Image (tube, rainbow, N blue to C red):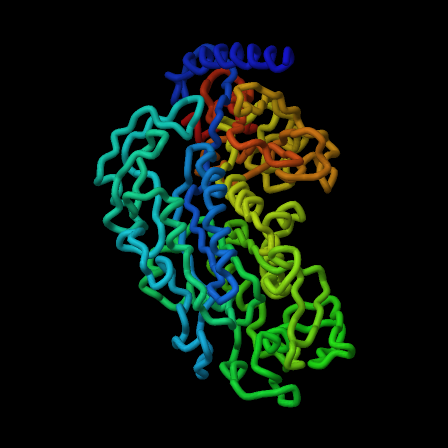
Length: 575
């Protein structure tokens, strides 16, 4: 306790000293011909800067007969996701939130529960039969910050607004639907939204209540494809250019995105080419394993190993390859802007083929909703393969692919929120860093200064970094060890099991390197790496010694901005 009290006093004293220095610099905003030597610049911030705050979230929810409890669990746990997003520095990002079903029908065949041609066809829905009162004028939720007005944030908590000049006209935002309404959120911040009389959580709860009358041949991935490509009026404006996109599946079945309607031929038995009509067709003609599929396994039970989706060149494939959908996403987005996750049936590289009472093949459950019984989920091989194409971290897989049989989806939704938080919170320093004059060169990239290589490849910042905990206590965070991280390069991921204590390091981020002056920090970004997610409400206080972004003194014989050019040779700054 005494250590934390000393740190709080130290932090307060440092902030007061830095505020004085910052004031002395406030009037210097251009190169000067004659002046006294300038003091060091101090970068001092609690809120991170840079990067888009636009996030489009699409939930693809199974609406077949067995999904009543799972839909309810998603609706009940959605508030966990929102708590994380509202806790992001700067407050809730600019969100679009939509829900669609897994129903695409079974054309050209008319099967029970699959009789609507093309089903919902990837359209964003307002609940079962589009019965929700909100959102207004769109089927998806819009909740974004007002634009082109003055918004004053609290210096110590950028989620809170102390004043603003925003009016209704500031909700006429390029790229957003017309008719948004201005309101103040619980922190006094001006938001523009398309719902009224309900909370965002309540609106989502209605839109995600899709009912259980959807087609039992779920085509999750083809639904996603059509959500992007079918030009459904319900989806107009949902996906924004340059926004992060998060796609989340909730289902107890694997994907059955058929490349031919013949897969749904009603007639068939054990001896015919397609076999009996049922979900096992999706497995047999969409997945291959080390062993050959047997429709009547010996003893009524057979384990299959190392199963994966059939590829485009597989002549037995009657489902579209996963590559169709990974290509879809990467054609629309930079992979770094894509977040994919699923709450589905667990898959551990094995499948079990069983037979039902009619001696027809079925896929065995990989989990049970209540531990045992008939309510469970089958391994979602194809969906997991799609998720893994975009999730490269084992730590992220802990939330990005979880069991639909869990009675609580909070860990998955909290993980989704923290992933968005990590992406939105680009921690650009507000000035170039003393001791790290060329972050690009120091991180093995093309140099952005004319400094000697021996200097520009060094990054030894002079920073004080703290966690400010929800109870107001403060913990100091040290610079990461030079050999830390999975590559022993001093740059551990934001979440890494190899860390016992949080640490920080400096990396290069192009979002922190803008324009000819490389504003604001020549690309320097502070990364705080941790073993686990911090408690909700934790913020980081970062203070670093810096230097001017441009040459301030043009006749002193000193390279004030540490770019390798002095006085008149720095023609960009001293004309």
